[in-house]
Amino acid sequence: MSHASAEPSAWVERFAPLIPAGRVLDLACGAGRHARLLAAMGHDVVAVDRDAAALATLAGERIETRLIDLEQSGAEQQALWPLVASMYSGVVVANYLHRALMSALLASVKSGGILIYETFAHGNGQFGKPSNPDFLLARGELLDVGLRAPAWHVIAFEDGYVETPKPAMIQRVCARREGAATIPICVAL
Image (cartoon, rainbow, N blue to C red; front, side, top):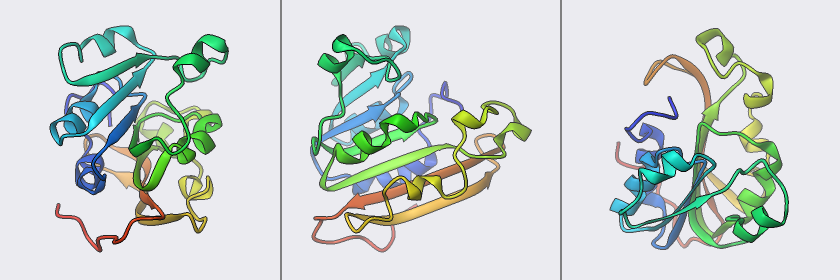
């Protein structure tokens, strides 16, 4: 689950087809592996990261980039802030955790929209970085940020060890914000 990986996460690939047509946010996108996948699927993509060099790799592609340090505050950041309530048909986050953003992130998903979130969990230190508990999810934490509320339907959730793309402890969720007419039982692998 290297942030520098050029290949999209299998979790994101599996659930991205559930995202309704529209504007999609790839938060802390790095070099844009998921932004590219989502754009290829026909979505209007907003890719946000604090690394200008990583965002530059998306130049010339049909992807809107925003250079934002998501952990900074201030008027300049607020002018560029990508998390506007009910703005996105889908939000994708991989290998990033800043707990202060969680409520804004959930609010930014439109009714019927999809949240796909995957990051490292408690115990990952035995496999390498990140190992700082500030950057690792506690057991079930992704569900506890608000996804147990009636406004959300959790389609899939995993919390534990993965072997690929590298050994790690991860937590990941795919959830639909209420309002969709139907919710598929399964997604083709």
